[in-house]
Image 1 (tube, rainbow, N blue to C red):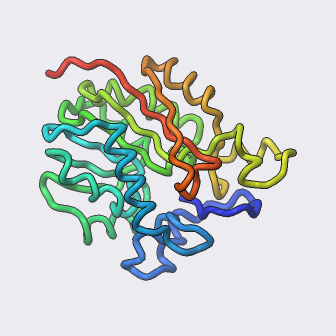
Image 2 (image 1 turned 90 degrees about the horizontal axis):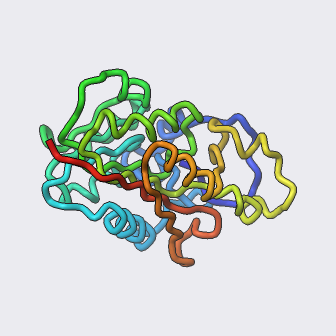
Length: 242
């Protein structure tokens, strides 16, 4: 997850796997780049994220929560008290080990190292998952992987009713991040860049609707550190529990 700021990064720059290893083992927010100018964001900012996700996913104590690209689990663990079961997956072996060491509570609250492709490679349906979260990571998925998550989640998880995509970089407001109006489109379309792929709200809604979801877009309050160039999307669909 990117550092906030206004300096244009050089791309491709994809240090998701290696960068966390350079930090202290307990620098949980630094490891996942939930930072401003290199310093972890404050507790009040984390509280805003937690409240936004809780509001968007409308948790029930019977829910099973899937956290896709969960990083080190520092955010994930904030929702353990809201759900019956939790399953977090991430492609980084290092971050998943941090999550297992510090936050896992097996068997009901667990983490595994899995990529998006690996998550959906097994066609076995999982009926326990009812809500899903992907916070601050969706922009780092390739277009193919992003489509895989949007299209295949309802098939893999038949009881999935809501998918929360958080902290998405808004293409229509990229100039507020880079402080210039003429921005190279290649920079905005690189999933391995420091910010990842920038999508407009309309593009994200179109992708969601094409896969059978309804989509609500929300913008955080102006006091949130990234509200000037990011938005959240809550994807919803009716389900019949089996």
